[in-house]
Amino acid sequence: MKSIKIGLLLAGVFLGVSLSAEGVEKTMELTVSLPDGTGDNPMVVLWLEKDTGEFVQTVRMFSKRRPYYRDLLTWFFKSRTIEKWSDIDAVSGATLRWNKSQTFSIPVRLKGHDLLDGTYVLRFESRKDGGNHHREFKIPLPNGYAGGKHEDAGYVQSVEITIKDGVDSE
Image (cartoon, rainbow, N blue to C red):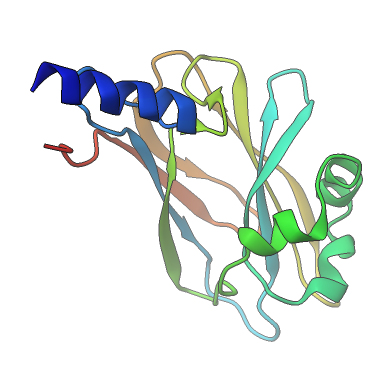
């Protein structure tokens, strides 16, 4: 039984998954909520950057309308030299709707980056056609971050984050 757990732990390290000695994968569950609104739903992008502002990767694109991605100016200019369109397509999801929430999970260890080591920031940008452009919503992830609710005055009204130990792999 010990050799199976060690094998799973080594496989997790190789695959970039955060596993404890018990074989449990940690995840970060995010619930992203939009306020009441009218007209077109906003496009929203979530990316990971270092606390120095250096772009790491796109985490989620809440739209499948690729021609308009470049309208999210801050994200577009930070990401374009690092990511390909196929990278973005892989993390694209349904558009967020007014007065609705969407919940999804990401691994705490994302492609070799430990999101809870105190050096990362989750960053949101949102924009709608003929509307405002919001690009300053940042959620620092300090060392030992345990989750919480974060609010903003932009199109993304709130983000609730819960750190989960996952499911035992035995």
